[in-house]
Length: 483
Ligand code: NAD
Image (cartoon, rainbow, N blue to C red):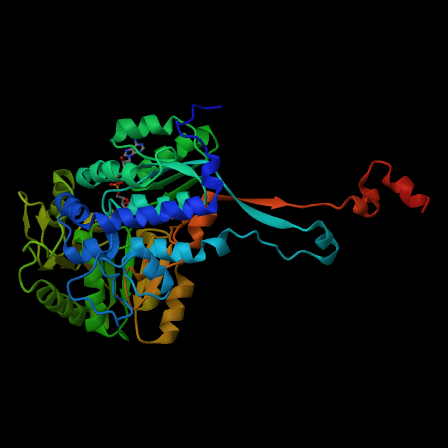
């Protein structure tokens, strides 16, 4: 038996009303500390308002339009109002996730009666969702609040206790979480522990009932090895090179707009960002022109202006990303500039890239889009596994339904979006996770309950049923003979 963290696996958390109260408190934490969270995200990653609001914490945007199906929850709306209006439109992922969880929790936690052959029905086979116990959630820096807090909703909703370890590379957000969480959540059940590698290493020496890790694959292996010591189950949310395919049958301008949005959000530091584009040769030039145009329109010619484009997280990563631009053997179509002082990298598009270009042998995690011309969709589908088998996301831009189906059937990835990028993670109740080298396990909505619960199969064998089971006892054949 390993050393356990100083957290009870408290029976308190077995109570579903307790869990709901804690989820509402987490909602309030975000709602009541919007400005502080926004400031922390700005300091850590220069996050523009639209990114901080839409994904990380979810506050109102200045021009809120309540009739739009994609409007965020307006500031000041109380949670009760939101729940009373179940279809309240919201894109703010974190708040939205809580609202949806609260609506569905009773249903998701209800015991399930699986279909069984008729002669087993007398045993009342039932699957109960039991909390696993004590969980550790290790978060990454690129969406430093969301990627730590959002899995933790599953920890709470499933009745566990747990520890959040935000990334030290986003220190302002990590410190803020450590100061706010004890004010809102029950401290005997949930903790935030901050620190870098040494702290993470110490945490991993202890025994948990589930470990949930988001980040790069090399640390993912360390986490998995540490978990193996106690046979602790793990969820690994990793990354990789997610392709965007552009067919000659695409609306090329819209494809460029949606790829640019996915690529340049958070300055390209998003796990499901389109890493590179494979463009059918017939529309290759048109796509490059459309990318130039859309970058001009998005940033009105000045992406460096504050609140337009996020910044690279730190100097080490800035040097790595700018190094990739310097080393590119392809042609820089637009962008290419950078500024060390503000950790800025210009939205950059590179064409004529070859597969041995440094841009193509590692996950870029920066605002650079390499564009490769391909002869056909078949060629694109054959190329993808050679670049990165089983990526986290995969995108196909086409108006032809046969092509949509073709790409879906002939590729594999954690998730996929047709005619958009990244949207597969924004839809409530869709499991989010990788496959193979892009990760294992999933979360969001019911998938979070499945991840952090033990599905316990229980049968209740009636005393009176013993006659039916005589055959299984050592003297079963004798009993059968005298019948
Ligand atoms: P990171 O450096 O922030 O590390 C992630 C976490 O691991 C941090 O909390 C860090 O403290 C911890 N850590 C570092 N060293 C450790 C060790 N030796 N033992 C245990 N924990 C340790 O993040 P990163 O790795 O730079 O993240 C970038 C990668 O993460 C990219 O590949 C990206 O695609 C991936 N990512 C995936 C998702 C997803 O949801 N699938 C989301 C974000 C990022």
